Image (cartoon, rainbow, N blue to C red; front, side, top):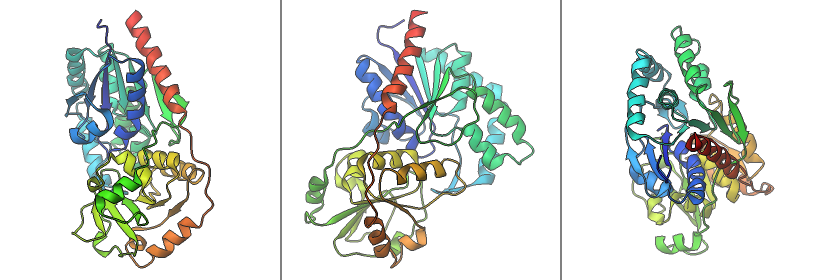
Length: 362
């Protein structure tokens, strides 16, 4: 057993939210265990991961996608069903390949947000594994694909995989879960630094100009930015592709980490998602969001957000129209609620340390 423990972090590459919401746990575990070695297994780009995790070893292949999407708010149900059929056509072989990968790496602890193949593989390799997220793919698959005749067998394998984790840490807020090993913890998030003045100076703006951030969690979205109205005194930073215009730029032009940008703008335009909603709930930045009524996590996220910052549900067509000024006026006229407190970081890391220490002592 090495003196410096080795954490294997497996992240579903379904947008950036799984990586963003796990980073505070890993940062705190590293603070407590300064020599911790970190391996991240995910198909997400290393360039993004470095902004949240610093140094690590990267394994870019993972047999997990979550769901295939038509846009940031629309699941491609048929394509997702085909993916799960293929994945589970010989599920034991998929698990065996991942088991061999983990046996070769010999980590001391696996943390999975929230790929179930990795959980099953860790259990097969006799490596302790903790699941953690605000969602799980078992309940999600049942929600979108449960009526399909092949789904019962697929769901049985997914649920059996999740049940092999020592515990499933469910961060607040979260979807309802039907798994047997769920333990609730508080909000897990980090508030970014407020750097609005620095950002405006870098962009050549006046200190009185307002900043908006259009961000949909790393998934392409068909928001018609070519029709986005140009508003006096506003400059927009976006994670979406757009044609060049004087009042809009890619978010990287701000020159600060995404978490700091999120805390520094006057409004965020987004969709329901744990990473973005939790961070704006900590900072109190107002939010215009496009709802996802079929996504099981949405209702808990929206209710939670309304308790911690000004927020307003809208549509893509309203955002990219002359209704945008009224939307902003309505949003800013709301009563300002109390911001959230992230109590789940210490709660979650206490569990990770307990599992890790039990393994090291064994």
